[in-house]
Length: 335
Image 1 (spheres, rainbow, N blue to C red):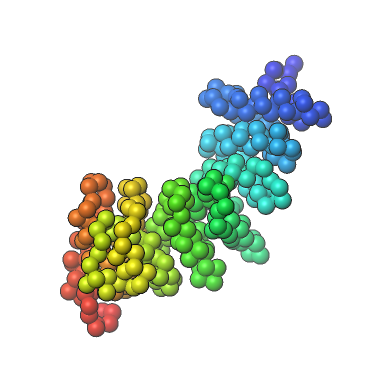
Image 2 (cartoon, rainbow, N blue to C red):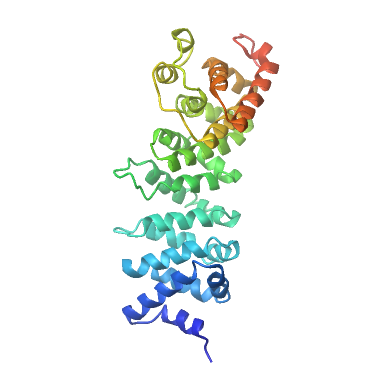
């Protein structure tokens, strides 16, 4: 005989809209507790496929279904099952369906699914030569469009970009100059959204792990890259004309006026780690000197109070001191 839970799961596919609505509401409630998640995981295949079909239903059904899936996807085992059953394709198709009312929830579902390597590969469309990168390009375009509201459902795309840039294939895709994705992403660092800002800084930092092989592609966008990395760690002082005269216009202009400091220490650490990864390369150190970067780091360090951020400054400082004799304004070519 069917248990109460089995009967409830069967009601998710009921032809009667009120019955279906009531069932999905109860399932959503169950996903909010550990016990409920555990019970539902015993029927994972049925529950996940039924909920995924409800995502294209009316808002009163699709919204609780999406919320249930977001909750379920926080469990790594259930998230793996979702990836396996093609949930990323389902989410991406619905995300761009005209009039979608669950955009934010679908994006949050993708954030959870791209915590897994298989989820990242699925979003990157690895193995599909014709389509590879299409999903990522769509998400970057949505992320970078000007937000009309302060509550942009695509803000969380920043977290997806951080996730995919943890994988080498993801970094290469974002750094490909023909696609121009990283350049678009970096320009979002000026956003007033802390979530968006953190997504951008984490993505840049991860991409800088490719500096050894892709430094040229990083420096191709230096006009946007250096302000995004150096302004958060430049401290609070207004810089002298002597200092700013040795900087490109986009940096010098910003540092010669009062500005809003970046209060999140994690963003400052990520910026410093990215600068360090670039400065590990000789050409990267030269590029940093060319924008008067060491002076910016010196001033920023004087203002810094967070011990973790100070440690990140010191790591670069040590690297620059040891490379000083060959890197500072020098006409020497690479050794």
